[in-house]
Length: 360
Length: 113
Image: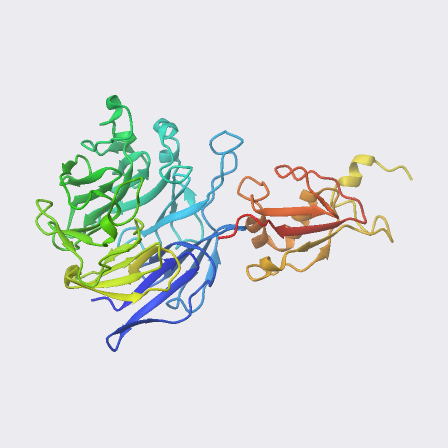
């Protein structure tokens, strides 16, 4: 089980260690600064932290010593003039950082707001816009989902073949590449949108995917937390089937997939899109262990009432064994669940709003 | 000596050495920037705000992305004043400078997180 837990928050990056039966953290890195994404690269142990400085823009830092010291790298940026429009925004936020293939040391992928995909071949020192996706004509129909601009929040790299990429856009559907990003096509048939006219409800490009998670041992199993439901794919996000009804709610942002058991995944429900708080004030983690046929609301150790915690899409993580789950909320609460979420422990109630948690 | 007026605004020409004794604009940066990038005040050979910034970036390239976005525009939550006047051209940064001018780079009151 993982004994290190990293937390990206609105006011710094916290490193927790499990020792003597307790999770403890020292002073944060980047105190006071918004950390929008992090990556603990399992291939070489490097840490990456993306900052979203309120005044001075998006920054990227890397640590070679487990977070003791950091070096600033060039952050992904849109080439000058990209897109043609004079009012085109620059990169506003790094939303996700993921490693490339296990044998492709130094290859990183990055998804941003506005919705751009970047690749680095040198451990984040330089970045290239993946123009093949940026130039897809359908991108003109992507739209903001929560933020003013569409964004790329999920990048799945197939562990069997790192050239096979799956990218999810909020809002702009699911895009797949089988040639390491040279070309792309729209996937995600079967997703259903309630927030567009009926004729567009099944349009794959209109889908507001909140987060995808795939089973590492069976990567064709892809769980989707969507704006208006929960969906499951057994063919690598090509097609999805809706799982309904889901109690207490099918609305949420986060999903985590068990690394070894394709039938198990975790979700964190909220009331609905216009009421992003736990149902009846009771925070639960919804786990299915039978491929979505049923859900169990895990609540032991979680607030039994008067909770207003929302779990952002990157703020739920499962460790490599599937036994430990970490969860951080916009209220600054951090929990670790044991035995696959059967029992939860409040690690801290005094953190800043949490953007991401990651074991590693 | 015949002086070509256009050349006066070229930063490589508009220097103290060409005009001995003439003052150059002086640029200084908010203290809130110092914890990210060291940026001490300095005099700059410049006829516009952009030339002033470029002169600083030439010696301190990391500073560029803190003040300008990738399209070369002043970041939304950064403010630049020339003396007591906020600059007018946040995109082109073409506001003209004279030798006595003081350029102040602040963070805007908006943009805090």
